Structure formats: structure tokens, C-alpha cells
Image 1 (cartoon, rainbow, N blue to C red):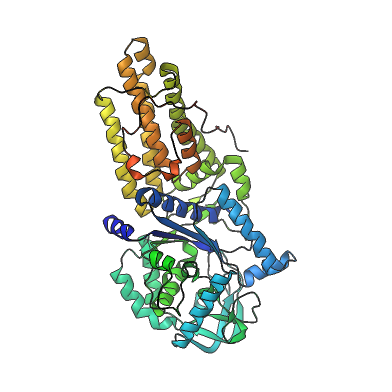
Image 2 (cartoon, rainbow, N blue to C red):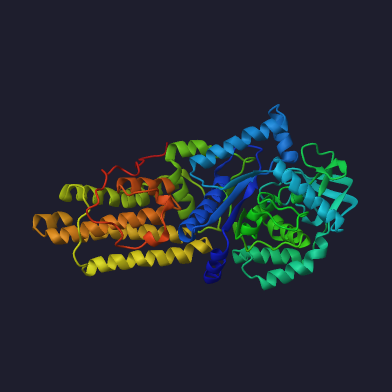
Length: 525
């Protein structure tokens, strides 16, 4: 899988997406979780291969948003405009380096959604018919009787009462795609990851598919159906098509937009498990109907929970995201979310966990190593990186571990094994601290072993440079501070991958003064 991915990346820009988020409230730690993961993946591919494109955005139409606006005595447009700014401020504070932020109220998206609806209508893939059944306003989802739990929505994070709806609406022929979807799943075993989620999708489609309603009569806050302004285009065609509307896709043009040609199909769609069905069943069927290739991989992560319950806007009970960022800073929060649990599983969020990771892994290990090394270079060599002699056995072991780290990152990151990647980076940092203790530079100085002292501090300073590069996709602010304290030229985030090998630090280079990377916290704030 890794080798084939490399070949693809040489031919096109790596394209990764987040879901587009409902702006019915301000972003919370759950939406940050998905977005941080996408940012790490994009940053890694920019560093490793030179090209990546990250799309995020907001899903701004529908009853849920309309109700949130009504509750604030605002028009829907004013409400979403305010909420979008809160998302952008949060992503800026979290150092999310997105390339585009798509809003479903933008003209570029509206035009594409209208053309897609019309194209599917003209092809007979969308038809007008009678609908009668149960509908959940909160989830914006239709359910059949057998799926309900005590007349309530079966979605675990919802569980609200459903309404009986009877109306004449437009439908997409999802039922006609059962066989083609199952055939595609069989021939593309990596389409949905992890495997347990793929098995859920296969089981769902095997049981049979119903046509889905793709319009809503009387919904004011939405894109009007072409030729039928009493109805609005429903979320399946409106929201899901953001991944291609942002690229300038136009079904009426034979020559695709340059951005669409370069980026599509997406390499990774990142989604939570609660929207798995929409992305693994409905979205592929729509793409097949449009004669478009399907995304390469749909990676489904678990929920962020507190005491076993999913974190969501409706449930509340968690601290505000911006407040968390003010207390702990973006990098400790990013580190905790990606280090605590393998990506794909549920993660039980706790501020005690953030403090523990901040104090041990980041302050005691990574921060301590940098401070020790830079302090000794200043103390023993007036702040200039010394010239090393031929490496000894301990030096060669250290360099071998550095080379091993690059191999591990190349193995772990394309598979979204963020926890394993971070553990490998911090293991190298811990090895650096052990190398300091075993080499005992203070004793080398006392014994007059200047050449050996010079070698030890050169290899340690070079290790700090390597760690800045390795940590940069995960902790961008920390990487920049390490780079600055080493007084290295340029931006750490604009370095090329060939720099990620030992021995690239120039001796005689003057480093900056050491400053603490992290402030330890004795207790929760």
C-alpha cells in the first residue's frame, strides 16, 4: 500500500479533506480532532513529497442551522457568517495549515450543486416521487421503522424523537447501486479504513439500499431545486459535493478545471464514524452516477468521549475549545489528541491526560533535551557548534536510530498511525537524553577530553535539528521554536526531506540562547 501511494504522489498533489462542519455552534474539541489529523497528514506530505492540499469548511444549509439561527434571533446568513469566523479563528490558533475553506453558501459551491442536481435529473438518476416515513431533524436523516429505537433516532449520539413525514419529493436511485458498490468494495480492499468500519459498510449495503430523498419542500434555508423553487436541494447533494465544488468541478464542461484535474480523486477523506454511511455509500454512488472516480481512501476515526459519552455541541459538558487553547496552548493539545489513543479508536478526553503528557513527554523529555544541549554548547563552546571527530560506537548507534526514525515515519504516517509515529519521535528524544547521561559532557570537560566533548555536542545539536523536522507536522509551533533556538535559516516548515538525515548541521554555526519549550503544570487550571 505504501509503495503504490508513493507512485501516486509523484503524479499528483496529495489531496486530503475533513468533513465540512455544521456551524450551528462554535467548534469544539471533537471537530478539532479531525482537523488536526488532516493537518498532520497534509504537512507530512508537503515535507516528504513537496505537494499536498488540505480542504476543510462548513455545511451551512438545513433545518439544524436554521433553528440555531432562530434561537439567536438572527437571520441564517448572519448566524453562519459569525460561526464561520469562530471556526477560522480556532483553526488559526491550532496552526491548521489548510489550503481552502469551502462554505456551502458560497456561489462557487451553489453553482456546482445546482449543475450536479440537474445533470443527475437529466440522466434519470434523480426522479420525483412520493415519500412517506420517519425523519430525524437533528441528524437530517430518513429512517425506516425497523431502524428506530423506541420511536427515536437510532444514531447513538442523537436518540431524539423522529417525525412522520409525507411529501412529494425528488429521489436519487441509490437502490440501483447496491451491486456496483459491493463489486467496488471487493476490488478496492483499502477503500474504507480501519477494516472494522469497512465490514460495517459491506454489511449495510448487503442488506439492501433504499432510494434517498434529495429535496425538501418548504425548507427556506437551502439551495432551490432547479426549476422547482418550492423545494431545496437536500444535504446529500448539497453538502457531499463540497469535495469537488471546491475544485471547480463542472459537469457541463468537457475539459475539467486545472485544480480538479490535479487533485481528484481525493487521496484521503477523513470522517467520524457517525457519518460513515453518507461517505461510504451515498457519496460513492453519486460519484459513479456522475462518471467520476471514487476517493482512494475513506479513513474513519472514532469519537472523542468524556466518561464514555460522545463529545458534541448538543450534549455539552466540556470546556470551550478556545479556553483549552488559552490554558494549554495548541501543541500540547495537538500532542495529547494524537498520542493518547491509536487513531481510529474512541479517545476519552481528559485535561488530566493533557497535563500528564505535557509534563512528562514534552517538558521532561523533548524540552529538557533541547535546553541541556544548547546550554552546554554555550557553556563549553561559546555557542558555536563544534567540529566532530570520527564517530564512536555510541555516536553510530544514535545516527542509526535517526535513520530508523525516517523509515518509521514513512511507514506509519501514510497509514495514519499518528500515535506510533509520535512514540517513535519521543523515543529518539529519550535516547538523546540517555546519550547525554552516558556521555557525561561535564565529565569530558573536567577530564580535558575536548575532542570527544566536541563530537558529543555536535551529534546532540544535530539530533535537535532532526527532532525539529520530525515533530513539525505534529507540533508546528514547537518545531519553529526549536529551529529558532538553533538559529537555523529559513522556516522549518519549508525544509526539504533531504535535510532529514544526520550530519547536515554545519560546525561553526552559532546557535541561539536556550529558552524553555514548555511550562510544566502542577495541577489543572
